[in-house]
Length: 259
Image (tube, rainbow, N blue to C red; front, side, top):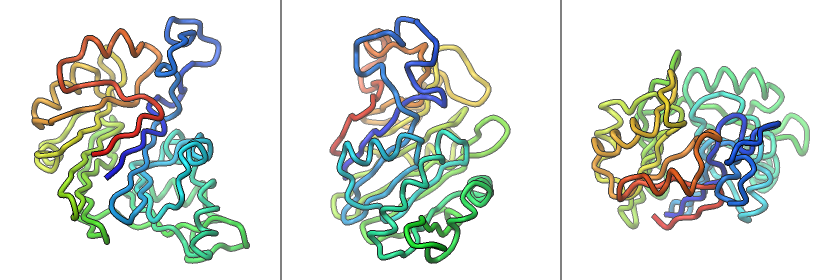
């Protein structure tokens, strides 16, 4: 299994427009963050989790050859607005729609934004085509299984997912945009080789975990290695990463891991 961090920032990205803080003017490439989304190669499947506005840029940079299915954790603009650029992957599927697994909120936003692209085939040649489906608790795919758990994100729920590859037994837990890790999610994530957790900033926030809350969550899970994502410009990589406990690190854009 291979994990591509295509973006690790918040809805504003980093640098923030008009900001001259130390992070925003940093020369460290780890302090430049696209909006949060990842790509996972699991056996013969290419799985896209969310699609930030910079998806096209990163698909080209990492030469992503195909997308077989999409997991949309929720419908906020920083996680969904790159989906139109998946039209090329529909072309490569000879016009067959991409299945998009999401929750009620994600499907509602998809239908609102991409009404022209909902269906089994593109409405016009060259258009994207998406088939929204409700993410089940457990989804069997050709190369393994994807399990899901509801996560609190302030006033509504997002999807947390755990992917387990059949051939290697490797396990990846991915929990973005959540204010806590539920007991259900902790159980699913136990034994994961890598855990990826939302960690907005040092100060508490009503709909995201803070750095300390994410570190506490990784202890509950008992993760071998945790990477933190969805960070604001308040987080300067070289400073904060050095303060984290062993086995916990900040992710950064274009980090690629063999799970």
